[in-house]
View: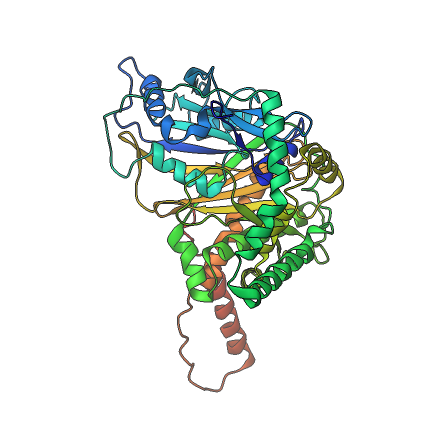
Length: 511
């Protein structure tokens, strides 16, 4: 097989293919909004051809974007092979706003594009260049299948297409010639040999875990404990049923908001914890408000979120997924923002201390010998009967300096993650240049009042920032005799002061 080329999908990557059905599509996306810069076409609108040439000039740096799926006979495991019919015009497309010509129109278009399944017979990505804004800006809706890329690798892709300084020159594209794909018989023969070698490779990796018998034993004990804790964290029993957890349809709606990163940091700086703890506490407050508005008691609900955690090495620039999955209970029964934050911070600290991300990653590796035909059936069966968590919440840090597509400055990027079969809502966040952008995807047949949830999300963040704001020291009032009337007036003044403080504006902002 020296003249042919293919790359086997990892177990986790192939899982994202196996979980898809007619309604649950496992692609991720992002909406990037740019100032026009020098990308205005002479006849008006954005110069899509120039953007297309720029993308084409970078494709040699991301070879996965010119590869398609193939399948090992009998085992039916997916592999990547070069696309001999690659056509950039199919992947970089143009769309024009025609109604409001603003962000409301863009959200509507994004929901429609996100609802559509990617063509399995072509490279699994699309890029829609959107113009027609009344103020001259333009947007890019980038969509790629989750089997190709995880959140951190997505940030690395921005380094390929975007630059920290404005540029005008577009390099000529490098020549592309698809490497021949193996025949079905060659694939089957090669994969049979690989499977026969796998047990010996696994034994060798165990021997390499530590130096000497004691080192291996300690490492194995740590890993087994991590796997046990991951299993005990909720993967083996269902979270509570809620109005957000119904069988989804094919249609998606998308909304977003932005908050100031400094305000997010002000909360964690006051109370300890991390930026991600602020995100999860904000989400807990919004979910609480939303469920209560739907007459759903929250005191005894076990509402669990799944938070992808990168296990990618700092020097790893490969595509594909290198993530594990945290399961964490959201404290939606807690009535105050401070109580919710403290519970979230304790929970995430425990997840780190118990190596749950490592345990989940090892569980994935432990099942990597499962034949793909069995995997596909198992994942689809699990999708209809299991509910280990209620919602996905993922937070990806981005660059904190302005970046550019050629000479057009990126203003904001709103991320999108897919919905699982029984999940009506997902949340993704991307921090960039001092802001945190929230992207909320819902199944329109499950969540009819997305704007209500966005209002609750904004309210929850404002309440959290306000509760963490340092209070000025109170001066001790001079002791003096007073009758009942003056004492009552004092209480009224203190109540009035608290009311004014509660109504003070917070600078967290919806886009």
